[in-house]
Amino acid sequence: MAFRGQPTAPSIPLAEMPSSGDARRMGSGLNGFSSMPERIAYGHREDLMPKHMPVRFAGPTIYDQSHQQERNMTYENRDIRNIDRNFDRSLASPPTRSGPITSMQNISSEKALPKVRLHDMSMAALKEFYSTNDENEVALCIKELKAPSFYPSMISIWITDSFERRDMERDLLTKLLINLAKPRDGMLSQDQFIKGFDYVLADLEDSVNDAPRAAEFLGCIFAKVILGEIVSFSEIERLIYEGGEEQGRLVEIGLAAEVLGTILEIIKSEKGNSVLSEIQSSSNLRLENFRPPGSNKSW
Image (cartoon, rainbow, N blue to C red):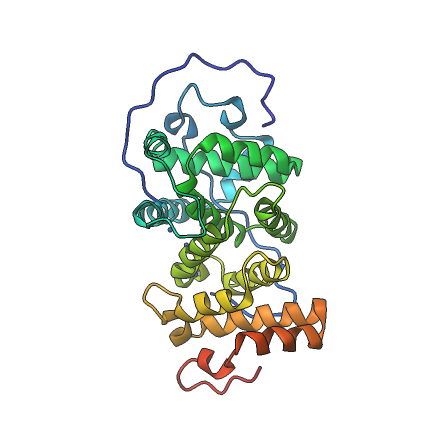
């Protein structure tokens, strides 16, 4: 985005490649936004990205260069592996009644961009956004991906990336996601959010190894999404309860309680007891269902 004025390189056709796309623990607290180290550098981007790529994706920003050495290459490898799993799920999932039906032409255009390029292009757009705070430019970049079935994986990648970023960046990302779902833009659907959140929860157990407060940070993002009326509390509750690499794994190891506890704390602190009670009663929330076996956790 910062390179819009530079000339582009000659166009070279992309070879068709298979597509794919997937992200886990914490110490709970009320304010879920606390500083964490920056995430990984994404390596030899020039080798992964097509030469005729729009200039907004053309290379790392000053922001990228100043933080690259702080990133962990092991985390990058796991991140790419998760993209494979998530994007595969996205392409395999049938369209829902509330979501748009993808045409064969759109599917073909998505397959023209390999998953690694989609990953790098979406991350380049996000990191540029952290520097410029230009939501309209991010929306334009998403459109240029032309890959709606990648969007759930993109949501998962962005959220998992935020676990090792600063408070300000997590806050910016949360606002960006909410605004991209608003009717004015309608870039991201509720179904895409739900799938993306499911991917994040599936890998939360791994995420806490790199970012010990990942469950807390995820709870903060979920709380904002609920208060922004993007996804309902009852839907988030279900995702947390069923979440994990295996269904119910997060409840078993205590991460579900940490995520849910943070959500309840944030809603209470921002909207008060009356709103929290109303949300809990309307969802028929049973807190005891989220306690790990043998736990006496009080809420």
